[in-house]
Image (cartoon, rainbow, N blue to C red; front, side, top):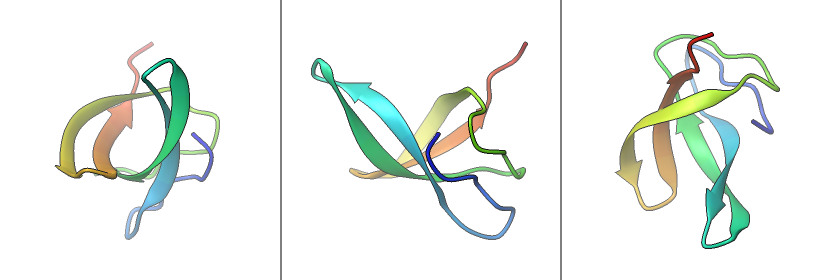
Length: 56
């Protein structure tokens, strides 16, 4: 993740796409700190995703 995700707004995550990495706007139900591994649970548009912290 490149920008932490606050409770009231988007952050940013880097995701592997077509052999490279691309940035996506990311939303979460809970705040997520920078450098936390996440899992994509849904998408809201072509460049926005909903994520959750990756379970340990």
